[in-house]
Length: 360
Image (cartoon, rainbow, N blue to C red; front, side, top):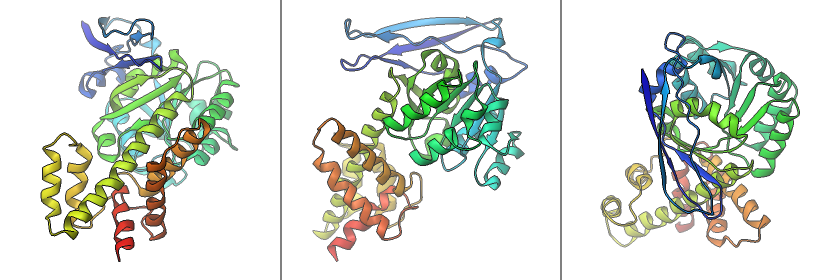
């Protein structure tokens, strides 16, 4: 039996970049099953800056290839709003998953689905071939990887650590150095996407670091996401994620201003959302968030406190290269006001409440 995987590459004049369109979760499911050992991992196609062209390659893989080329034991650290559905997708695909979370009760739903549990990141890493980590902030990411009973203490040659948290470049480099000091491999792979894409296995992975680990982890990334990019050296994935979230946070702040202004001048903000959805500036975020924002409802898909954290880190990144970001700086202040109003755990669309406060 032969499986076909289409791999597409994009060119960026500033980055060594490869993009792979993954198999659907349904097709990839059998990869993790001990009853159907199929290898789906494909070496991504890379377009160098010297030859800016679009590349397409079809790679065929036989189901008879050895399953020993893929790790069979997967660890997952951090089971919050993103980590839990990501780990669930791995479990439901038949992967042998071991989980850990600071609050043990958050592990229980996954254990009921078939996951194993270990009481520390160290023990998870020691018992698994590849370990994923999804933590809330840089401090947590460092502590779980490098702290007492951290994952690094359980790493050794032949193992891999994939950090899918959103952190800054220096933090990612610090974790990378600690993991690599054990002889293990490191890959940063922050995601673009929130709760619903995580549940649906539609995340976008922005990876950088060890290329061989990227290729090994690819089938698992494909179970959790719809696409993946390889961006070269550690730090590039973190930087790309911060730039993406910087744009997103500023867009939401501007959208909030528009909704309030439309209402203030006697227009129906719901119609504004519809008008925007049919024009050149249409974005899924506006269509998804707009109707709830009009009703002052902010069901959490991406916590406001995390958006503000990402804006703060993006501003630090911009400062490090002397890039002015006045729009982002202004947006960051609005999110800080929203946090001060007790909206940290609401969806980041609740930033509109900061503008309402300024209008009163």
